[in-house]
Amino acid sequence: MEIEAAAAAQDMNLIDILWRQDIDLGARREVFDSRQRQKEYELEKQKKLEKERQEQLQKEQEEALLAQLELDEETGEFIPVQPAQCIQPENTEPPIGFAQASSAAFQSLVPAQVNSNPAFVSSDQTPPPESPDLVQPTDAENMQNIEQVWEELLSLSELQCLNIENDNLAEVSTVTSPETKPAEMHNSYSYCSSVPVLRKDVNCGPDFLDGMEGPFSGILPPEDTSQLSVNSLNDTSPSNPDFCEDFYTTFIDTKVNGDAAATNTISQSLAEILSEPIDLSDFALCKAFNGNHSGTRAECNDSDSGISLNASSSVASPEHSVESTAYADKTLGCSDSEMEDTDSASGSMLQSSAGLYSLHLQDQVFSSLGPSTQTSSLPHTATPKKEPPPAPGQPRVPFTKDKPPGRLDAHLTRDEQRARALQIPFPVEKIINLPVADFSEMMSKEQFSEAQLTLIRDIRRRGKNKVAAQNCRKRKLENIVELEHDLSNLKDEKEKLLKEKGEHDRSLHQMKKQFTTLYLEVFSMLRDEDGKPYSPSEYSLQQTRDGNVFLVPKSRQSGTKL
DNA sequence: CCTCCTTGTCATCTA
DNA sequence: TCTAGATGACAAGGA
Image (spheres, rainbow, N blue to C red):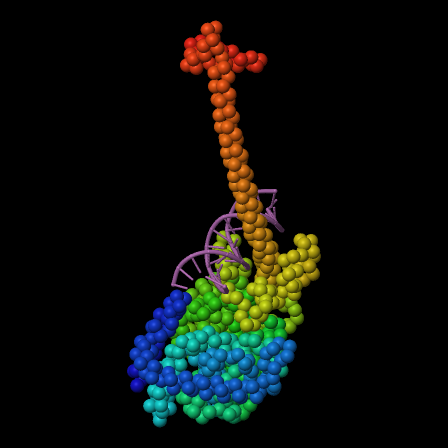
């Protein structure tokens, strides 16, 4: 069993590595996972069962959530009636909800069943190879079943989003105090969607729980969590029945977009959690702590590049998932060029040991803690760790890497999101449209970090260039239209002239005809001394410039002056 | 899946 | 030398 587990772990590592190498190309994980391929057949058989299960789950979710939600008339979103409750919008899609439920439920169940670290939870990974001591001995057969179910879940195409959504889950799981504003839950609502259902104290189908608990207990070995050193969670969870609520509320309302309020809530929650013994290196793995963005140029929250950047987790899958989330979200705080830096950084991270990686993340954690714990005033200066502006010779990474704005801040442009992320106190519109003098005056009123200055300059440059490009294109189109109009006019004129020429030609032909007739008529009336008519072959009539007409012999015609 | 169009962005040149 | 504008080129996303 141990050997099997070790081999499986090695396989999983190789799979992870291969998969991450090609994830940019759109390759799915199962492409590299022979185990999953081998079980396709079994998964097919279980799909039906699983779909039914999902439907049931969704129904339960909706019932439970609708009971706990109230519609915010202002935002049109559902917010929890109580801070501790999770929210779910009506439009939550069942597969995603289920997928997220997997994580959330897993975490929620952890306190009740096993000691486990939520930070390491991820459903986008196949369960880590369990060592015998990690698996409950009596459930060996059940575990196999569970694993099948788990892999089936992962194989479902709709659940592929788990890779991302759970990253977001980890991101959203940023610790947040319950009293944070409930309206801003754009990112987090879906993750909490299924939580109430999955909680044991809520009306949750035992069938579903049976199906879910197993995988989780399998993924999160009950005895193993003591090594995970998130003591605060472990200590709190079993003894405190409200832990789940508190924990889930942390999912709510966490905007990791550099929003000041979010930062504050994060810091508050951090303070709460940090009040207990905790290993930050473990916490750092949680996406919640990629708050280094707050100090750096935060803007790439809409980037999709992070997904593929994720360092190859040489470790267990859940950890990897958290790492992935951390780096997927790392883009939040960096500019485009910094995204590239992030790419390279993560690339180097691939080669770094886990310890170094952990340290690095710790740095991120502390840098993220800095602004929120030290000062909450706006605009806060960037942390010293902020990345320098891109080198002049270094080609800038086009912003086209960015995804369109997500649900959150969907109405904001990318630059607006970046400005918000870096807490630029001026509206983007002003930054762009203000005259130079006013702009300089405005800038002189505030103290900006290098990153903020760079961002503001970029925003102004991009904004102006955007307008210039629009004008340029407009002019180009107008020129084209004008040229086409000119072309049309010229064609018309040409047609008119050709018509005129034809008329003139016809007129000329007519005149020639008349002239010939007249000539012959005059010539035939001429008589010589003998009264005989002149031969047209020997004589011709010629007219001089003064109008006089002479009869000229053709032999002398060449010398005659007309 | 491919093509076309629109738009944002960057690099570069010019005034 | 710096800045703003103009424009070609490229890429992403949508129809």
